[in-house]
Image (cartoon, rainbow, N blue to C red; front, side, top):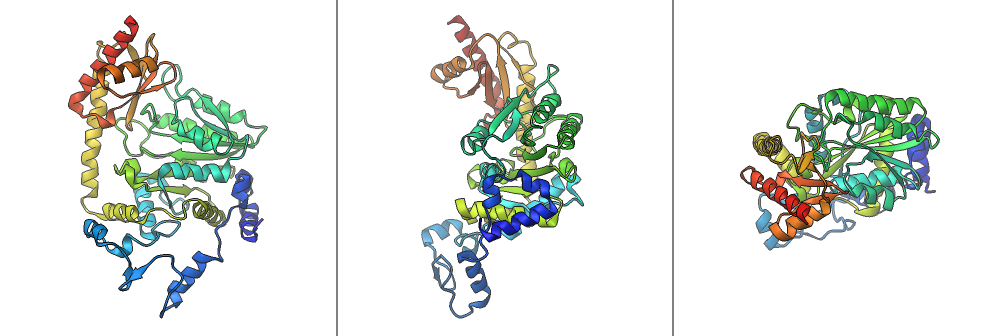
Length: 432
């Protein structure tokens, strides 16, 4: 093992032994090089006043070399904020502004201790960092039966973890905190579990109530009290898109400083919150309470980043930073929020009529981009194919009877036509 990795591990063993126990084999072996190209380049940047022949970019006229055909399209930005490599942890200004935004959006974070957000190449990259650092072969990764399919690729296929699911909803169609607790307590022999909390949920567009959020926290704490080390990942991809009474904060804040055996990790980003899917700007934030543990986790995270993507794209970080600092940002975001809320409310209004009751029920939804129909007596895949081939309508079939509909990408005035076509496809399939 590299001595730098050993030093980080010793700090964790001493100050936060349960976090050390949570690490995967890779998590224990990874480190961020302090001696090498990056460190020597950093040293040269401050001292090589005459010539700096360390950086792996080309320069010209005192700045980064670039093509006019590109700069003409990006003339609102200085070349220094576009073309050089961004630091592995991301632009420091962006990290600071995102932290301020997190606290503003989540008042429960005020006066609590957590790491500075580290920039990731959007949320999937953040989740893969969690998998690399904490998931070993056979480790339990727990999330609901209604889930984003990429979790399986990230945790099971890439890292060999065992996926444990529980029903998302109770019979009363509330969050199944008992199912989460039972799945957690079943890992007592292993002594470790990774829990993924994704609210608003993909695919259902569901966020639990405040009361159910408290039950989730109690269930996780009960597992910790039982001696289970719990890594809790809040996948907050659709954060802020809360249209009704529900949790309006990430559970990350409620989990901070809850128990030494609980490590909360927040994965979020501008991708969906700020409607910039192709920019690929996300963040990962650690809820460790010990400063040394935070430093160790940050260094290991930077080691993963260095070993995979080296650093995230600089231009998109610059774009997001400028947007967040713009005085028009909040008003423009509120305008888009109202459009999304209008679409969600329209869908619910349509579905609460009697016109579709013989074709489906729907799972609770109150947030996010999606909702899910539970089709009656027909295959979701058959309906999906009928919609696509006969009506040129795209939907997502999940399991035997669930059909995911993204109202996020359908203008409000077309939603009734959309659901009428889905209804017609169901009738077609029933007729054979």
